Image 1: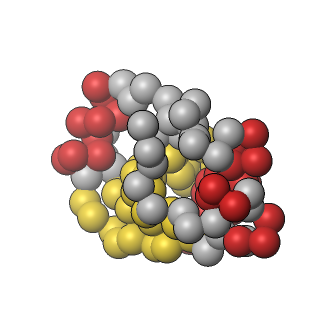
Image 2: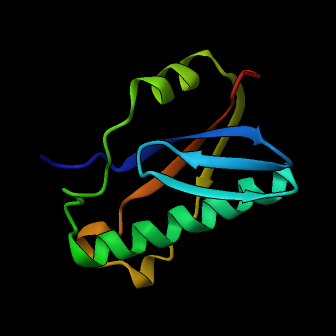
Image 3: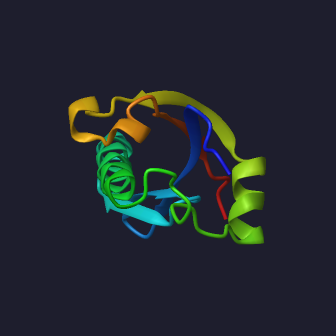
Length: 113
């Protein structure tokens, strides 16, 4: 299976106790902190690092994604859209097979519990 040139990932944003959480549901990556915009920026860097690592190990990205639970899928579908961000990949760090890939993060604010 060939991966598309633009990989779209969903990031769920929500409050948990006294901090904000950003969860990339397809990669099962999480950041947290006191500021919403800080965790949104941090998750971009974590996703970028994971993509660089994954491309170096497996340019076809066959093992990149994790199963998404029905609960997280529902939260993404019922949340409020907060926008998208194209993550700039460092092309010179990627193997040739991955240099044409880009990552678009789709931010969704989870509904209050």
